[in-house]
Every structure is written in C-alpha cells, then in structure tokens.
Length: 189
Image (cartoon, rainbow, N blue to C red; front, top):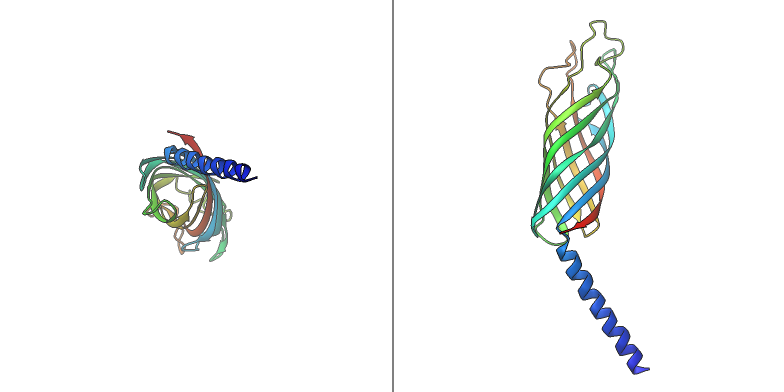
C-alpha cells in the first residue's frame, strides 16, 4: 500500500515538473477573444461588440510582441435627427504586452491602422450623403489579468478619423471603452 502511494506521489511530482517545463517553453501563442463596450463619445454609435485574433511571441518571460486583428461592430444610433448607420473596424496592428509576473496583472497596447467598413454613408437620412471615413490610426491600450490560459481586460479602442464623417452638429467617432476576455492557444517554441 505504501509503495502505491509513493508511486502515485512520484508520478504526480514528475507530471507537475513536465507540465511546468512545457509551459515555460510555450513562447508562441495564438490569442482568440471577444469584447464589448460603450462608444465614447457616443454621438454616432451607442456601443460595440467584437472578436479579437492575435499572435504573440514572448521575447522574454515578461515582454511579448506580435500582431493583432479582429472585427469590432459599432451599433449606430439616432442623434440630433440623424439615423446613424452601423459600421465596423478591422484593425491591423502591432501587439505589445508587459507581464510583470507569470500570472497576474499586465499592461499592453495594440497600435496600427483601423479600416472602417460598412455603409458608405454616415447616416441613412443625411441628405448631403456625407461619406463615412475609410479608417485611420488605431490604438487599443489595455490593462488586465492573465493566467496561463485566459486574459481578462479593460480597454479603450480608438480609430482616429480626423474631421472625416462629421455632420453639421455631430462628430464621427470610432472609439469605445470596454471589457474583453481571451483564450491563449499555445503554439510551442
């Protein structure tokens, strides 16, 4: 009976050692997630929902670089007599993450270009047919909590459009404050 307990204990210790060694070797990962938030300022959109897809390489255990994309759908809303159209943002961005500890809080940002897609007009009932912007500089700073498998974050995302898409009494905004959750798929070394 004692030898069975010792064997089980030894197998458990060996398994834990192998698992920790394996997770330490996982420097490349695919991240898949979802997010949602409130548009800010909420002039032409009320909120957004989207999906995130990124690749990350841990340069050091506490610093990761990669690429990020996805889709964020903004729900148009009525404002000052305008019936604003829905639109989407498709980012093509660099991913930067700082992990002070193996598990816990992290800081990061995605920075690149956000392509704005959807109806060509800002508002369905705009008689001037003001064209929506095609895109602009995209940023998505975030703070969150991570473990080996999951990331939970608070973020701000913004595609800067300048004065494109502005109507007489409404500025065009492709920005939101939100929350997200992502799952890490290890790809190995």
